[in-house]
Amino acid sequence: MVILATLLVLTPLFTNLPYPVLAAVVIAAVLSLIDVPAFRRLLRFQRAAQRSKGRPAGVVPRQPEFWSALAAFAGTLLFGILNGILVGVLVTLLAVLHRVSRPRVAVLGKVPGGRRHRDVGRHPDAKTRAGVLIVRFEAPIFFGNAHYAGKRGRSRAAAAVVRVSRPGARTSAPPTAVGRRRPRRAAAARAAAG
Picture 1 (cartoon, helix red, strand yellow):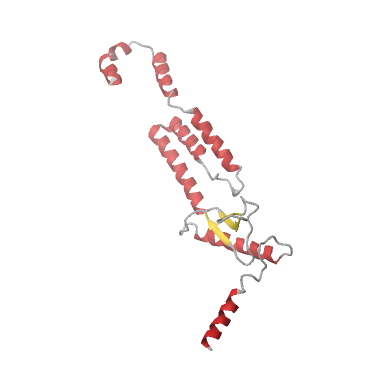
Picture 2 (spheres, rainbow, N blue to C red; picture 1 turned 180 degrees about the horizontal axis):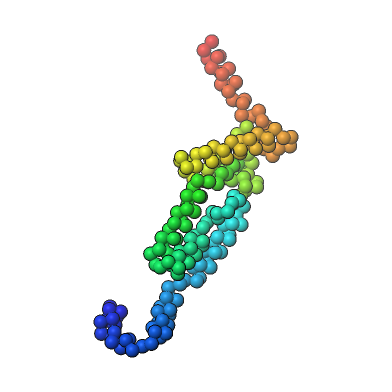
């Protein structure tokens, strides 16, 4: 309301002001719109995410919010408000597409005394079971990442086979523990039928 009243009533007073004074008024108004502490928080968050144990190697960071905000800021300065917002949206969209097309793949193991399976890369005390590989894809599987998910799943399975066949592999059960149950069930079924 105050701004509208100023524009309607006090506009004639601003006509005689020099342009540097008007520029200073605009710059003072715009500086209050820039939130530097928010940029610092985003940068700290991004650095913490990059130091995470389960972070895959790559050019695009897993948490690109800082770079998206910086791109939107630079785009607004260079191209104007609407085009700057468009630049920020495009950078964010590309980062999300990259994150979804190449999801993080985690091998899960059981933590002693726990009820749930945890990521072996983030929980070193989690143990996998011989002959069993539990893999979690940290994104929905769709046509854009199906090939990547299959390739990563096969490479994890091949690595698990090598680890189980290697003497002294760290597992919580012997390699034959998985195959023991079927012969007992089959024998029980034959005994019941005969």
